[in-house]
Length: 96
Image (tube, rainbow, N blue to C red):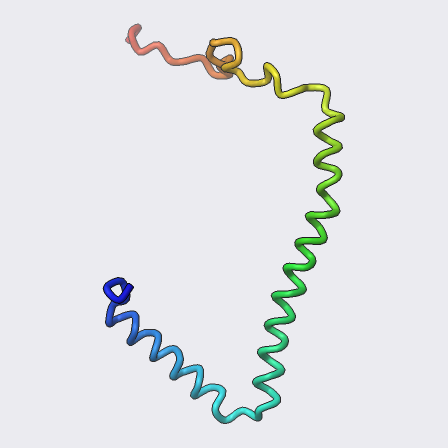
């Protein structure tokens, strides 16, 4: 793992952390905790809302699979060993 981290990456990481420390150094302690807590809360609420929406939509996805009249059998254009129908016919370059 040591060979995969370049010196440039270490310099960039140290610079970024030094800038963050300089930004938070003069702030009151409550502001730092409040900002970190709000960021964590935002991530948790976003994940929770995505999980809730997934759970709400999951029964509809399964219901759609059972109510759909077209089954998965034969819906592939390659199911009967033939090419799919072409919407735009190919250009015949031999006539030119």
